[in-house]
Image: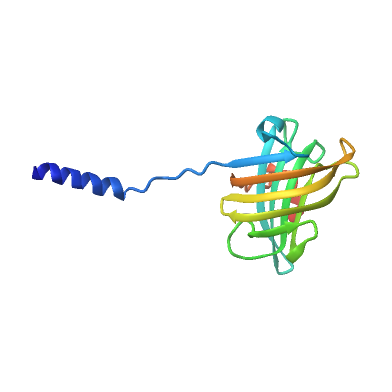
Length: 179
């Protein structure tokens, strides 16, 4: 009986002392004009980039989500959707992007863009709320922009949770925004 109690006690101690590894599943939800869809079915290229650079004693940080219709290298001259957050007075804290609210109005030096670029594109309004950043990012985005491919404004609603952040500047064609 003592042997059985010893084995049970040992099993409970060892079984309870191990921490279970939690695997965070990425969530990517997007809707254009109120119509939700799977971004991995609509877009051939789904990638992101975050980087930083010191400019005139201010740290600039950027995050870009890039979604390209056609397969191939990410390029500005291909039809794509982009979301970007640029902080031109960021905290020097080692994070890839500062938590906060980013908009087209640039409050607190936090600018955001949501767009399908082309001739005469423009942003009507947007708000991107970044709630968590490490090697993964959590954010929500709402906005309206002019889509030059269909010649009308569109709305966007997006949610990212545990979405991986790339650090290769060539993974999107928007690396020039940090320079």
